[in-house]
Length: 98
Length: 387
Ligand code: SF4
Ligand code: SF4
Image (cartoon, rainbow over all chains, first blue to last red; front, top):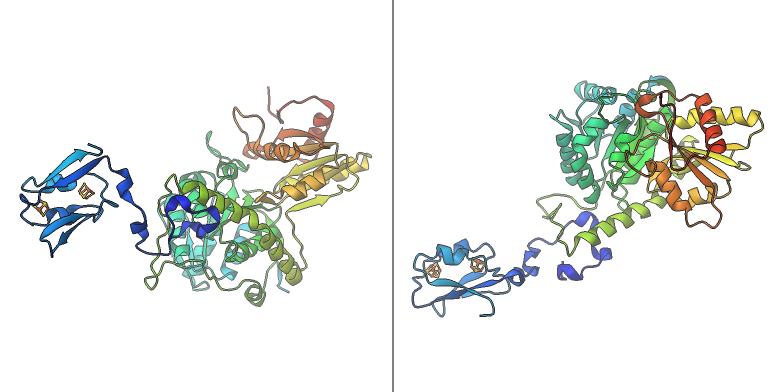
């Protein structure tokens, strides 16, 4: 599935709705769901990677060169799990648009 | 040519599935389908059929096993009736939408309640919109041929759809009829090995049965609907080649004495045999009556039906399911719908009969035709009800 889901025509549907291209979840941008955004405080962060492990959408990854965590907002759906799990409150959820 | 044997239709149906060399049978016994499953179990146990017989704990599991086995590319057969179909209904729809070409023998039985084990078409009508190919059989030979045809058509990569072979419970499943068996060579010539369009295999992972988000559900339904409609030429080709092998020619809509008929009786399944006797009787009285037997229920052969029915003044539909609180009954409703846009259309009468295996004789069919023509029945009439 190279196209976003809402561009696929019925003629392009694989028989039985089979998804023959594994790992195509990356073409689905869960970031469009987000109503709250995690805001990261690099000074508080102790690089424990708990947020990286817990994020259900693999939206967080360690940036080794800059020694910090980075967010991919195409996929961060704003669930707040990272903020909840962070042991030092280095992540705070804020309303989108504020 | 195969040999002709006098045999119970259920046993012959199981033999037909075995001749197709099914890999998996998953079924739960239920009256009046039991003999089909029992015989297949015997064939597997005695080593006559090299297949996996899965004695599931319910019909819901039966259909689930069938879906899984087709998904890995195994030729799969099951059979059920009424309450069994009700229990598996959830997965029946899923097999349709996932385009998994299994074959199911449905021994048509009235849905409970009240509890009934006897014949009518209410079970088939419950899953009318499951998106399977659905055929109705009139006699034992048709059942035998229909099962082999079902594998051939359903498994065709251009079709890839499950097929339901409807067989009237008891009145057809339990009768002994002369049936011409196919030889193994005939089946091998007619039915190529099953090559699924997609297959669950570790070598090339795919996802089956994924979530249909609002953005994609409609497109998937449309694709499924078009696939079912487009199966029609393959169904016809299957019948043509079957005729070349056996000399028996089937078609989606079959007619009997309709050429000059002013009144056409329309039915599905065994009631057509009864009705053909009624036609002969009424013809002898000088009445211009004919019969249309609708074999292919899904995809509905609207084109053929329009062509045949448009010439008549009256069409009397014999419906074998009650639609409580509805406008008429399932078959009539379709016939009325497809004829509505015709410039010249017959009056279409709905006669609900043979419910819960209430007997319908040729005289009853004659009486229903007389009633339809002489009385002004508006939406439908439930024939033969006391009181
Ligand atoms: S808010 Fe949820 S989705 Fe976004 S980065 Fe945190 S854990 Fe991941
Ligand atoms: S959980 Fe908190 S402390 Fe741990 S890496 Fe993530 S932001 Fe830093």
